[in-house]
Amino acid sequence: MGIKKAKDLALSPFRGHLFESFIMSDFYKQYFSLGTRDPIYFWRDQSGSIEIDCLINLGSGLVPIEIKSGE
Image (cartoon, rainbow, N blue to C red; front, side):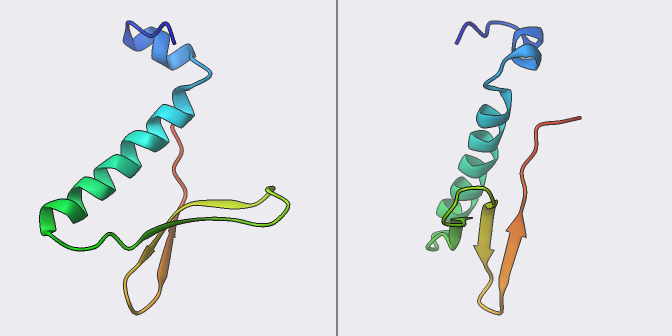
């Protein structure tokens, strides 16, 4: 990807994808550390035009989370 410095990351077209992966991996890590099954899901409509980056099932309902790398 050619990312060697913070400035490279800021200009990279992969920035959003990398940030989303970083956040999701941290969610999974937290549930793993608790020794519980991760209640994390992803949702996208059939056309692919609408998506929710992360849905966390709290048992009493779903919490939608949109992950953005913007400042």
